Amino acid sequence: MALLEQWRKMAYETQMSEQQSNYFWGNYFNLEKGIYEKLLANPDETVTGTVRELSEKYDVDLMIMVGFLDGINDSLKEQNPIDTMEEDTPVNLGFDKELLYKNMVAAKADWLYGLPQWNDIFTEERQKELYKEQKSSTTIVKGKKVGRNDPCPCGSGKKYKHCCGR
Image (cartoon, rainbow, N blue to C red; front, side, top):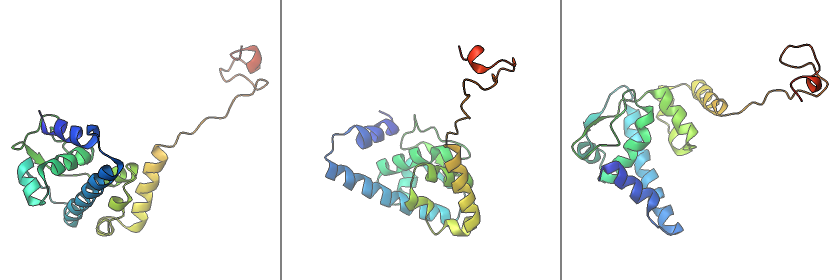
């Protein structure tokens, strides 16, 4: 069984009590935060290694590293083969800074996009811009509703109720 499949089974499919789930995810998020603090301290360095080497480098369990790689993969400049990776699969952590920040905002991970290391990467104003860009990209704006006596939007010149509104 591939590592990603094992991680997802352990993290999402295991029957855990609410207390066990809170402990599991609290621990995971704390470890994830620690990895990001180290990565963001030197954001232009592309960290590479096997899955096992990275778990040792960041002093986390192999499954925690798999979960981390699953989470960061969409923010990488070159995505890792997470579906098929094993312990000895070479992976990289070369991330797109703006995309990573936006993905953290999208995940509502304020403990990550609020890390002080971001202040050395982006100005406070740029962080606000990225935050707004991400939030507005998921906002649905409905167009003005056509009234039955308004001109038809198809351009026929007829009233909507006598044209497309039938």
